[in-house]
Image (cartoon, rainbow, N blue to C red; front, side):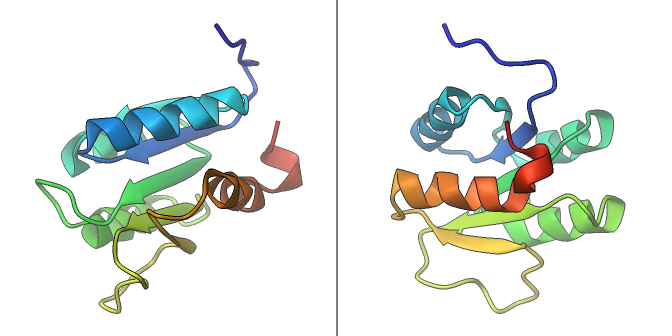
Length: 126
């Protein structure tokens, strides 16, 4: 089992796809990040309001709320928390995307992890 330092950045991953969520959680955990997960928008917003989060990674399509609506609410509550939007679409949605970065789900693990490190910055990365 990996050891994660108590001061490691906390990442909230939101996705209703269990395999995708588990893969992301595992990849991020191997990098030393603390990872929380939510399978829907309501659970994600509850966690976001109750726990210190350093980065949000969200699927664009969720069963209960639109990804964009969740991200807008998160940015309203905590505008400085960076957000990555994931989608199977080739480009970011044009209808008010507020994510700091858009990543296609087919991106390599290396590109995904580099994007996470970039948004966390040198002061927040492990």
